[in-house]
Amino acid sequence: MNLIDKIFRRNKTPTIKLVDNRDFSALISDMYIPLDRNPDVQICVNRIADLVSNMTIYLMENTERGDRRIINELSRKIDIEPCQNMTRKNWVFKIVQDLLLNGDGNSIVHVSMTSDGYIKNLTPFSMNQVSYRYTDSDSYTILYNNQEYQSDEVLHFAINPDPENYF
Image (tube, rainbow, N blue to C red):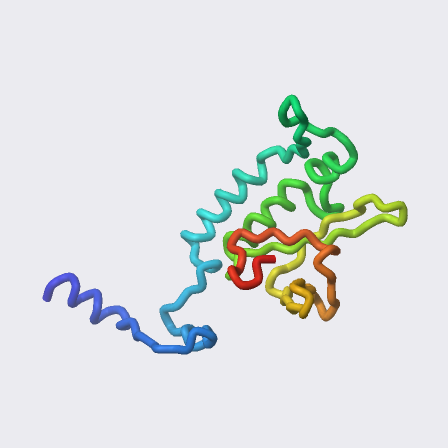
């Protein structure tokens, strides 16, 4: 008995299932592992997220003499303390993980404002609880925890924009 025969007799033979494109639950079988639970994929995504989250975020302005770095309260908020409940590194790490592991390549961050118009907090949403509702006016709203948010109340990062609904 050769090595291939031993492998196939010892392990289960994979099955092939034909399913409708919208019925992903039928793909789940004994041997199926979602990408976000595959250890090799997690290691790669975590490495990329770690590298990106170590980078400094510069707020830049285009001028006649070239680009100029802006140092003000907005740049401080984005690069130093975007979310009160997590470090900037963890904040960027979560966004990058969402972009790479989330099936549609999106990450949503809620913008909380103070009464005088300053950004108070930038809270990332858990993407498994986010859904989108497209409106008739070529826009959309975001549903999160049974609450509806307008598109101007969030930061929407998209790595794979939908060709039909590019927003």
